[in-house]
Length: 197
Image 1 (tube, helix red, strand yellow):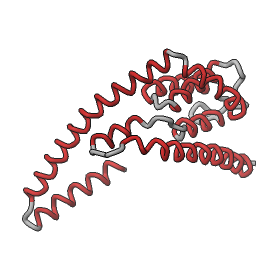
Image 2 (image 1 turned 180 degrees about the horizontal axis):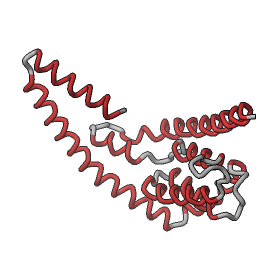
Image 3 (image 1 turned 90 degrees about the vertical axis):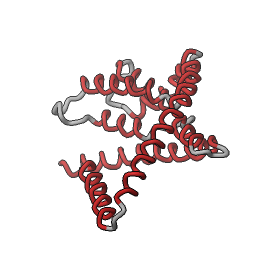
Image 4 (image 1 turned 120 degrees about the vertical axis):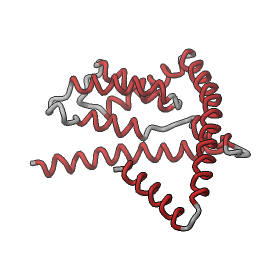
């Protein structure tokens, strides 16, 4: 659907430009945008390499293990259907810890492992997500982020005078997002079970 919308917008833009006799404007704008995209991407590679290196050091220093200990009581509350010593809990904790530190690349494999382990505990139809899987997806997509490295990098590329000023607002926004995600997960689940009877 999104591809159709994009195609419609592009074709409409070209047709309107042709109607007004300004096709060369579309061509120059497309080439300029492509050049800007390449410049931003190359700049992000350097920034992401730096931040991922810092985060890797933090991981090796045991920061993720400390976060895992902090998050463990919360996972017992959020995933009551998952046994405490099940491998899914370990993968969930590692995924959330990596997300909190802004380690998106490290969080994704842990998220996939967590989903595979949760699927083993799924007593519903294999094509239907369990409660724990829905909760994990909500948490994974809305997790609190302490260091938004990508946003900081884009702001640096755009010439921001203070690219790290976004950290506080990002922490606030992702914190609110996590709270809303957990509340929505519990609310809609209760509605689902109420109307399913």
